[in-house]
Length: 110
Image 1 (spheres, one colour):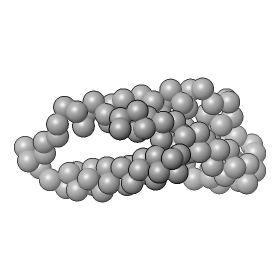
Image 2: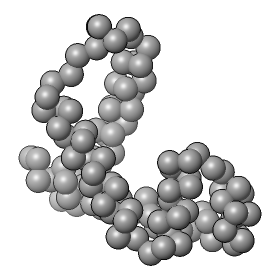
Image 3: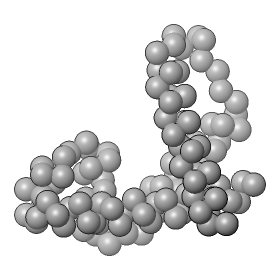
């Protein structure tokens, strides 16, 4: 059951990414989304932010530098005075936490 929910969440996010990439190439007046989609996207964003805030300080910094500021693992390691392997490990754990939270969110939508 957990695997189904996780895969469903991942598929939804992949589809959302493709959809967003497509919509970014269409002029504004042609774009339309339902209020339900907007609400789900907003809730999902808030859920991800909340999950990130609950992470340990080091993990949260690494996640924010990677995802929000777009730094590479090497740049993060240099900035935080740690190893690239530690950055990779912490980022992997952060994403695992987020995937788990997202899968629970999508289960509640079913």
